Image 1 (cartoon, helix red, strand yellow):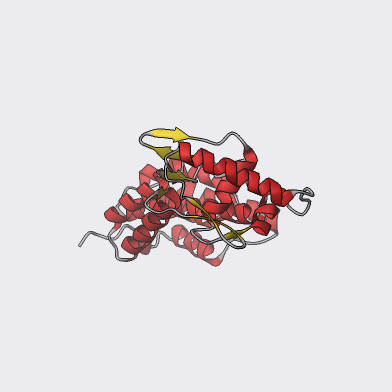
Image 2: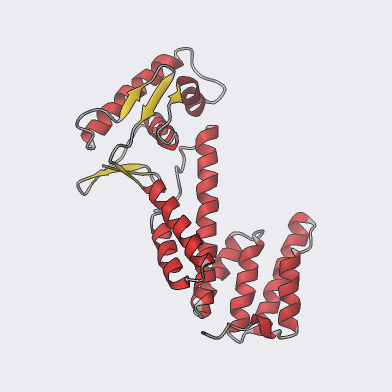
Length: 257
């Protein structure tokens, strides 16, 4: 079995994909998965399912959803019925030998960051591309309403953006800056308040002999930040702007040793 949460929630077994059609049962499974092998209390499940306005028989409804979830998992590969364990205060989802894309993503990101810090950019890029490939689309789209699922979706989105940033840095360090210009143009449009994407775009444009366009990106960032937040760009962006104006040789790609 394999649980996949980085996109539409599904469970895979022997090349077959199983998805839940009942939103409440899907929310229950997602909450247990995010629990990471720890017991999730009935109160936590009630909050994720109904917020601060639960029905009068919420506890009984949770019991029904757990029963439905057990049946679903049995059909998805949990033939021994041991995935969901009842605890004194709630329920625990035991992964056992099952795979989980979130754990794989975290490991790939951890490896990628470590390799990048060690200057092993080609290997770092491979690991980061592996992490990126695990994200299949919007995480828990239309499902996340309670605090646990909302926090998880926010974490997943931030990690996805960091993965993109690190991948761009790795490609830039390898001299593959022209490959990421289109991507960064899209990202600055989608995330106009994220200054790191402006910084990366300015650098790769400069290294692609497009100095004027790099300076235009800075002016665009400055205009957006002033209009939206009443702020000037961060000092790192201002320093890069000045370095581009003076064609600082520190911006050149370091020669291979």
